Amino acid sequence: MSITQQYALDVYRARLHGEPAPPAPGRDDWQVVRELGEYRRFRAVLAGRPARRRPRPLRLLRRLWSRRTRPHPHATC
Image 1 (cartoon, helix red, strand yellow):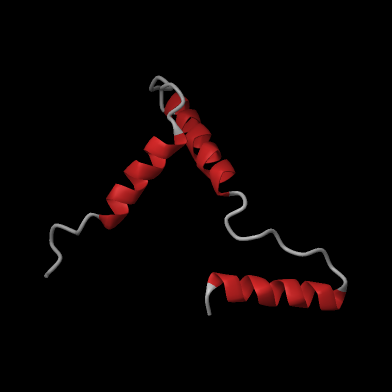
Image 2 (image 1 turned 45 degrees about the vertical axis):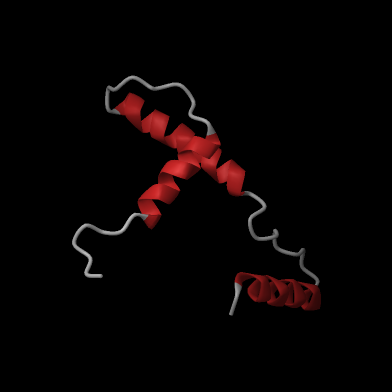
């Protein structure tokens, strides 16, 4: 089942029970990216390291995506 199908099913069930519809998938993605950066700066301060300037969200996403798509060094092709 795709995320869109699951969302449609959740909206349908919420309507049957008279509850508010759940948020659309992807609606809060940028807020999550911002909060992740704040959390990382907070952890740096707790560890005694200087908190760096606020990174741009696109740079953070690019870095996370490159880690995800990079092949594992021990993976067999």
